[in-house]
Image (cartoon, rainbow, N blue to C red; front, side):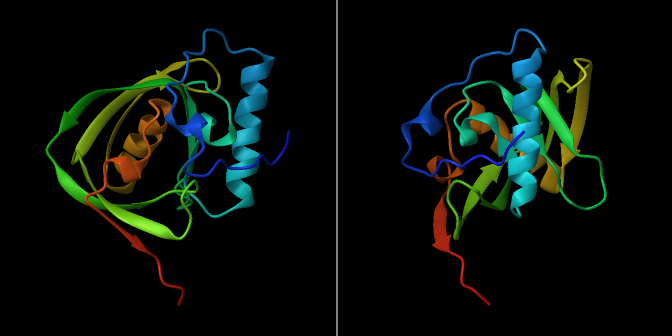
Amino acid sequence: MAVKEILQVGNKTLQRVCKRVDCLDKDTKNLIQDLKDTLYDGDGIGLAAPQIGVLKKVFLIDLRDGSEPVILINPKITKKIGREKSIEGCLSYPGYEGIVLRPKKVVIEGKNEDGQEVTYEASGLLKNAFCHESDHLQGIVYIDKASKIYKVEEE
């Protein structure tokens, strides 16, 4: 479809809770394609619908490590295990990173882009991405949770 503008921190849309997707219709499929086009136009690993101005519970994660990209519709984290600090960045707050306390492992459920129920158990970077993008769907950006924010220095 199209590369969309990524909303930046301060835009009120990023603070709003998204709505459930009730059917996998043409609009939802177009949204998924817009997420793909926009994410792959840059260098991030995840993008949630509200970041491109759409208040629907959909996100895309692609760790760009050879693993399959993940599209989740109406995701819900059903289990959190342990706690650990992680370093996160966000396409909606470029040039900065922060330290965020996240679970060590999560179980997340939702539907894939074919409308099939899926469940993922994740740790490491994938777990961080699931938590980060799920927060976006609840109107939360990582800087709301960060214990420290710092500017990333160019090398």
